[in-house]
Image (cartoon, rainbow, N blue to C red):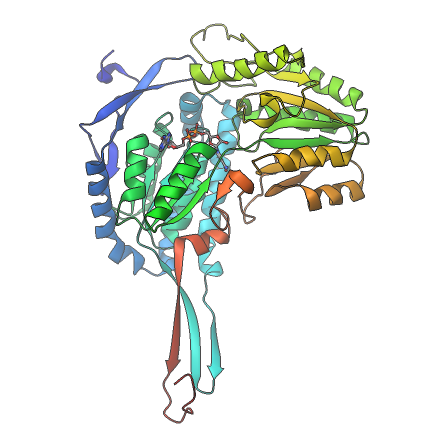
Length: 489
Ligand code: NAD
C-alpha cells in the first residue's frame, strides 16, 4: 500500500505553525482494532528537532511577554473547540489506540478538564508582595522557562499531552511535543485546534520519532525542561540524561497498583469497581488495578468479580491492546503464573473479535492464588489481568504493597473508616483510593506517583506544574529616599 492510499496518509511534523514532511525514516501506524496500517509516522532526526527549537525560540519573546490573562483566552477558545470536536476526537483515539469509544470519550472529557485548569492559572499564579523592611518591598513573579518538551506514551494519545501542554504554554513557554510513535494521530488534531484557537505559530510544535529524538531532546542545549510519561525503564533513561544535561526533568514511569479487599467490603460495589479498574482501557492504564490483595475470606467477592468479568464482551466493552507484541507479553504472564501454580478463574487468552481477526485482543482475566514472588504479582503486565494474592490480614497485604518498586495507586475496599484510614496512612503510593478502583485525582488535585513511578520533584498536573514550568523571580524594590539604610539597602 502506498502512503497515498492509507486512511490518514503519511504524517508530518508540525513546526512553526506548518506541517512539514520529514525525509527521515518512517514507521507504519497500525490500528489495534483490526491490525490494519492506517498511516505512517516520521522517525525524525536531531536536525528536525533543531528546526523545531528554532521556531519555538523565535516565538518565545512575543508569547512570554503577553500577559497571562491574555494567553489563557486562547485556552478558553480551545476548550470550546475540543468540546465541538469531541466525537471525532474520540473516534480517532479509538482507532489509533484500540480503546472503546466510551473510554476515548472519557479521555476527551479529561482533556477538557485539564484545559479548564490551565484557564484558571491567572488566579493561581498571582504573585505575592510584602514590605519586608521600612520602605522596601519584595515581590515574586512566575517567569516561563523558554523552550520546553513533553514526551508522551501510547496509552492516552490525547489526555497525557494535555497534562503538560495547556499549563506549560499558558504559563508562557513554547512547547515541543514528542507523541508516542504508536499513536501519533491525535496530536496532529491538537495542532489544528490550537491554531484555530489563535495560538501563535511556533508556540506549539510536534516532532515525531522514537529513541533518537527523545535522546536529542534530552541533549538539546536550548530545551530548558523535559517532561516524560512512559515506562519506568525509559523514565530513568530520560530523567538521568536530561538532568545530566542540567535540565529540569519530571519523568513519570510505570506502575503496579494494589487493591486491598477486606472481608467487610460491599460485595457488589467492590466487584464492579475492581473489574472496571482492571479491564478499563484493556488494563493499559498506569492507574489500573493489577494486583488484588484478598484479605481473609473474600470468596463471595471473588466469585462476583469473576461473574462481572465474564459479562464483558471483548471488542464491545473491552477494547484492544496496543500491539501483537503486547498481546503476546500479557498472555505469557498468564501462562507463566498458571505454570507456577496459580489458578486461572477467567481466561482471556486467545480472544478474537469476529470481523476484526487482525486486531490485538486479550479478554478479561482473573487469576487466583498468585504468590507475591511471581512475576505477575510484581511486574507491570499492562493488560486486562487481575492477579489475586491471598493474605491473612491487612498488615500482610500492606507489606506486599509497600514492597513494590512502583507507587502510583493503591486502593482499599472496606466499610470501616478505621481500616481505610490505616491504609491511607501506610500505603506507599502517591494516589490512594477508598472504595475507588482508579483513584485518579480530578483537577485541581494533582497527578503523580511515588517510588519508581515518578522521578523528579512535584506532580505533573495541578498547582505543582506551576513550579515545574516556571522560574520564580524575586525582586526587592525601594523608591523612597527616606527609607532607612539597613542591611537590605
Ligand atoms: P514507553 O516507555 O515505551 O514509551 C514512552 C515514550 O518513550 C514514547 O514516546 C517512546 O517513543 C519513547 N521511547 C521508547 N523507547 C525509548 C528509548 N529506548 N529511549 C528513549 N525514548 C524511548 O511507554 P509506552 O509503552 O508508550 O507507555 C506505557 C507505559 O507508560 C506503561 O509503563 C505505563 O505505566 C506508563 N504510563 C505511566 C503513566 C504515569 O502517570 N505514571 C501514565 C501513562 C503511562
